[in-house]
Amino acid sequence: MPVYGQEGEDNMRIFGILLVMALAMFVGPVSAAIGLDTIPVSPSGDLIGGETRVESSFTFSFIATSGEKSPVETLELSTGLADPEWTVEVLENDHEEVWRTATSSSLVLEGSEMVFPVSGKIPVRITLRGTAPAVSERQAIEIIRVTVIPGSNTLVEKRTVVAGPGAAAAPVLAGVPATTADQPGGGDTAPDERPGPAGETYNGSSPVNSIVDQILSFFRGLFA
Image (cartoon, rainbow, N blue to C red; front, side, top):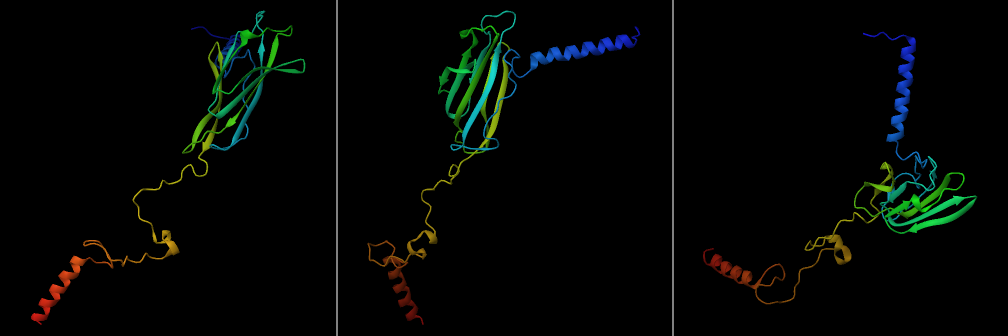
């Protein structure tokens, strides 16, 4: 069994650190070539479905490597917001130029559409605005998802959306009688005393029941 001295242990430690750094480059949330690791979303906290307006604005950069003339990355963007509005601007020399706009739930940005300047860096700002979607119960919604290709590295920001006022209102069931409070004047409804055809209820009885009562009273009188 080989015996490692202090120098051998130091070499192994350095090798381990380099290995971890190399792995981190491949398992990071997004490609290091665009320098993006977080996506801010405003407002913070829970959102009210159908009401809260939401905004996310962030900047990243396409960065040239190995003498590339154009970015090789493609960004796939998507959102779960209602009525989304995307604005993509290229920032260069203190000048902002709109690159793309969209009102769809997804958007694809092809880096090959641009050419690297001498600096080898293209700053881009993405702004997303929309409304928290209407929901019937509390649930997590993807505000924005960014996937960088090649590599399929993904960065996702979620928020909890709760039902807005009236979204969970109890349905009115057909055939359910009104309560006393639902009656006009808040009192009990008086029986209908108007005469009607045989078998129709009035004063709490019917003509048939009245005749039977009279016959029974006659026989009770005979045997009294």
